[in-house]
Image (tube, rainbow, N blue to C red; front, side, top):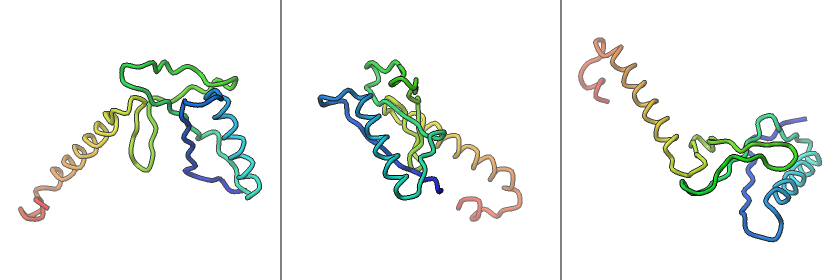
Length: 119
């Protein structure tokens, strides 16, 4: 069996079915499709995020009987998305990475010429 990576499921809150029922139904359909194609859903790495406005209700309450608690932030194609859609976690991560890169350049700055350091 092979594991499938980067399978994404998007569910809106509108409609007659409850969000939990809709999510469970979609996950069952994904499991069935993957098993017929000799793939396995890696539930240990599965994450759920509930997006809501910054000042809206986002209490992180469990979904369904499995007590799956939504994550505060998830990574999607290298972008860190938080549950309020503010991008603050992503910007903070980018600032940390940029600061570390400048620190590394500073460590070897004495062996580089001016033009190489500027590049």
